[in-house]
Length: 110
Length: 133
Image (tube, rainbow over the protein chains, first blue to last red):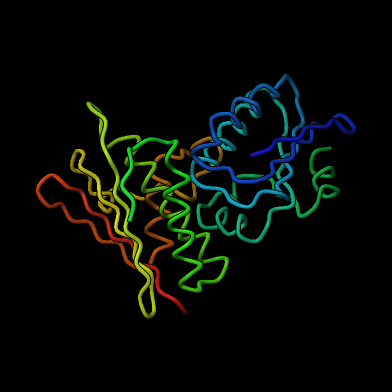
């Protein structure tokens, strides 16, 4: 899985491209955790994410909890249909801020 | 049919077999993803828990049937009936949410039939996904 990072208007935008499964979860978690500094605003762009399993959801959960701990804010955006389905079934769509687009996400992260 | 070490590095091969069979069985994209997801959860559980003391293998057989696809996953590790594991609380909020049990929950939710049998020292799990459901 590929991870691209850029900073925009004080928000760290991380794009995950490919598959977030048990094989890629460990490295992804490490890389995302390294970004959680005090007051951090984090946008995870999932436009390029084709697949996510429970291992992947776990990574997002861990990062979300960490962000909360350091009084930061986190939002996900641009979920594909199949990934959204996984979020719905697991109940994760209720515990994350999920925006349809990057623009909407920036509104949430203000 | 493939039989490989219960090691994370072999996960892609198991997934590939399930993917090919699902495509062959002419499932739609959403179903193909569900099939892959369910299989990953089972394989990863076996890798993590079935062989606490020693190394072991996982056997995967994927069968295309008239109106369904079946995956039979066999391991030779400690007895583990995943069907009896409790569902996680999917209504819990961020603070109280854990991921434990989620994989198994996915398998039960996404597959149309899940059967566990133990034969001697083999755990056998048969997952069925029906078409047009």
